[in-house]
Length: 275
Image 1 (cartoon, rainbow, N blue to C red):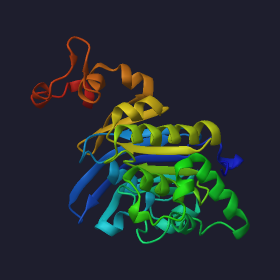
Image 2: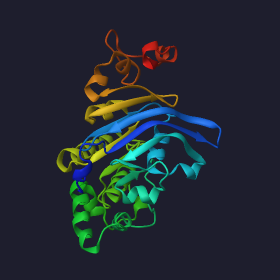
Image 3: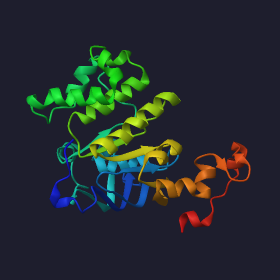
């Protein structure tokens, strides 16, 4: 993996300062969101569907314009350099690569060809080592390397999507809902691989997830979003111990065990969440 340049080692790999994102020039999707991703950490951005977390990821990846979205105010810095006005290809060249929600593989190409498609920034001499790295991380892909991607299972497709991103040797890997639509055992395998990328390669990871339980188990720090705002943040362990998070994101109650959905429906958010 490519290491973080020494000159910016003491600054956050990614720093988002009070961004506001609007769609169509009028619809506010994200308001005053700030977060940091430190080098060598997994930072999770959590929240229910529609909370705004994927919009934040699109903002930092430079792909808002595809949906008529724009950053109305605020700033984003990648390794100390402002990128809020940069296009997606330039952000990729600076070292941040996104694995989009839904995988978006080339369905008619083989696993190996999909991996090669992610290596356009690498020299020919680096390709063999990059592929070997991906196959070591996801051993089940070795026997599937000549299989057309459209015939893979959902979990295998997610592995290829992550592997394709890794082929470009990113300094920061952004993952959008990697557990979406996958069976629990496959989710466990994917999240173990994400943890391994940090622990063994020192890769910096921004993890956008709805599965709070899985994300908090592996992340160093996390932010929880609701209605376009960050309402809570802390280390993974701090949030796992938080009573509100346990009850309404992990489905646990210290008094009664697992929370029933009928109770969640009538829940009124405690004022301190927005303090």
